[in-house]
Image (cartoon, rainbow, N blue to C red):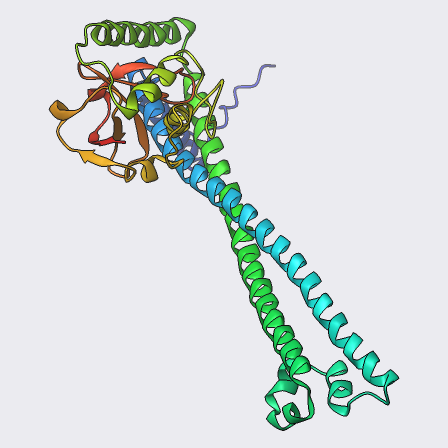
Length: 343
């Protein structure tokens, strides 16, 4: 016989829980439907961010260049001091040998003078300070002692100077490492952004740069103000390496950074200028109006003076722009111009 028992009804608590869960699910579904999907940055947005990173990398590069230049200078100075100390020690040994010979002669003739004997086992500085002992020495011995005293003081001063420079060298090497890491981090971040672009977007950016370069080349060809004077040979040297890649810290002859190009070019003309853009900014006469610039003048950019190139005429410059580019012509208006420098 079939059962007519009524089905068991869900409890009020169970109904409440199910209702709440269903409402939450509906709400989440609604939020997901209404939420805007994350948008991929456009080609132009990526370019703007990458350009900013490259600018920051170049700023760090010039700091790196400055630390590297200081390191090389300190190494040369330390080497010179160490050579001087070595030669000074030889001179001191000869002076001491000479005084020892006097003592030997005295010994053979009847015994070592007590004052000389005391010197041979004591510090000449301390010994000479005892003025009463000078009366016991011959004039020749006094002169020898004084020479030894002077030489010892010179050596002590040189050793102290070398020690200070070695400490400075150590801190400079630390700074060099930090700046190198900073440059590499900026470049890696820029490359990561570039990798988000499609092949078509990368090709479009490359074509935009190529068009701009061709326009600059045409403007330079139309220039009526050739380089003259001391800058002429330097500018010609820079022109001879158009197409060479930008590499941070490089000073030629096959790759360059911005100040590496300008310092190398002037070196080919037999003119020494500082290594970094900030130092090059103070290497000659400043020209503040673009209309007064001459072909071959250095041109300095950005408020912190971290970029430099050559003025090429008709509002164009010749420079090593940044990582991923080559030595090329470009409009002077692509960066914040500060002033020119006539060497």
